[in-house]
Image (cartoon, rainbow, N blue to C red; front, side, top):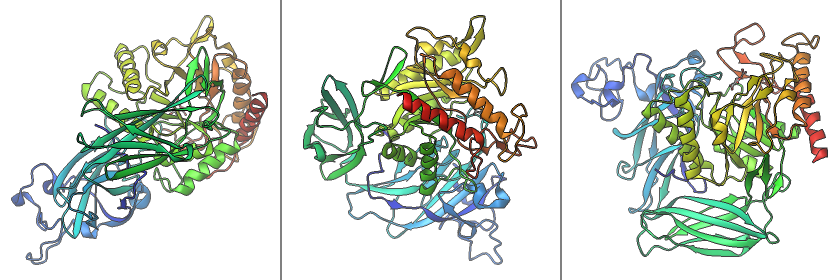
Length: 588
Ligand code: GCB
C-alpha cells in the first residue's frame, strides 16, 4: 500500500470543533460495531441519522447523543482538552459534520488522518470505512462512493488502551496521549492522480544524479507523467515498463549548478510532478548521505552529528503540537548549536521534518519498536512493517531525514528479536536505500572495556548506543573505555544524560541538582570527543516530559532528564552542551 501524499495539495480541512464522548463501558459498539442491529440499540438511539435522539420516544433521555458531546478542538490530545479525562485510557467517539467538497463528478476523494493514537475505526454516513492501528502515522480512506450531497457525518472511534501486542506495547517511558492528535482533511483528486513521488539524489564525481519516481493511480497507456525542477531548467518525462510500477526518470546535473542541501546551506528546490490533469509539487533538498568506514558522510564530506533527542510534547497540549511549538523546538535546537536531532521514539508530526529541511537540521526518525515488543507474532511484524512504511513514505522527500531508526533498547540476547530486526532493516532498504538504517542499542561491558556485542551491528549502517554512565551506573566519563573497532560501523550516542529538577541547586555529587546533571554532561562530552568510531551524539533529552514511571518527589510524573524543563527553562546542562558543541564546531 502506497501512502497518499497530501501535503503539497490544497485540501479541505476537517480540523476545528468536533463532538467527543468518552465511552468507558463500550456501550456505543452496538451502533457502529460490526453488528448493527436496530433491535439491539439502547433506548434513545437510532441508526439514522447518526446518533440523533429519537423524537418519537417520549422523554427520550438520549444518554449518548453525538451532537451533544464535549466540544473539542481537533487536532488535540483528548485528555488535555477535557481535564476530567486527563488520565483516561479507552474508547472515545468523535464526530463532526462537513459539506461535500467534491467539485466534479469524476473526482476521487480521500479522508486522511495525520495520526490517531492508538487505534481508530472510522465511519462516514454510517458506512464503516475501515480501521487503523498505530498512533503516530497517517492513513487515508477512499471515500468517493460514501460522500453524499450536502452534509456528511464522519465518526471516529478512538481507542487509546495500551496493548501488549501493540507497537509500542503497554509499557513505555512516555505518556499515552490519546486523541486525534494530528490534522484531518479531505483530499480531492482527479481520476488519474499522483499518489506519491520520491526524489533521490546520488553524487557521481561531479554529477548530481536526481532520480524521480512517481506512483500514479488511474493511469493508462496514454497517460503522460512529467517532472520538473524549474529553478534548474529541468523537465523530464517519467516512464514505466509495467502497469504496476512507478513512473521513473533521471536528471543528471553538475555540482556547479546545484546547491546541495546541507546544514550550512539548506537549499530547497521546487520539484513538480504532473500526471494528466493532476499536478503536485514539493520543496526538496538534493543531498547524499552515506557511511564509509567509521564515518558518516554528507555530500562526500565527513560530518560529526551534534544532536539532541526530543519527544513530541508541549505543556498543556500533549502530543498535538502547533506550528509555534515546532518553531520553538527549532529555536532551542539551534541555540544549542546542533546540526542534528533525534525525534524519539515514534514518528513526530511531519511539520518537524519540513522545518528541519528549512533550518538545516539532520534528523533521526524512528518507529516505536520500544523495549519488549512481541517480535515473534506475525501480526505484530505486519504492524511493524506498516508503521515503517507509513513513516518512510510520508518523509522520504525530506532532505533532513538522514537516519531511519527501527528500534530502541530491544534485547539483543533474544534470537527472535535479532532475526526480525534484521528483516526490518532489509524492509526499510527496500523502501528507501538512500538513507542510513540505525537502531538505538545497548553496549556491553567486557574485560576489554565497553563494546558493542549486538549482532544487529552487522546489518545496520550506523549503531546507536544508549548509555547512562554517571546516572544509572558507572562514572560520567566511562565512555572513554569504549573500544574502537578499526573501520567499525559508525556509532552515535543515541542517549546519555541524567535527571535534574530545574531550580534545584547543590553540590555536583547531589542527585537531582542542576549541578549533578551538568557534571554528567561534562564527563560524557569529554569522553566521546576523541573516539574515532563515534560520529556524534544526541543526549537525552531536550526538555522534561511526562512519564508515569517517574513519581519521586523531584519527578512527580515527569522524566527530568531535560536540559530544559517542560516550560522551556534552561538548566545548567544546556550551557555545558552548548559550549561543547561550539567547541566542536570550531574544530570542524
Ligand atoms: C532510555 C529510554 C528512554 C528513557 C530513558 C530514561 O534508555 O530509551 O525512553 O526515557 O532511558 O530516562 O531512562
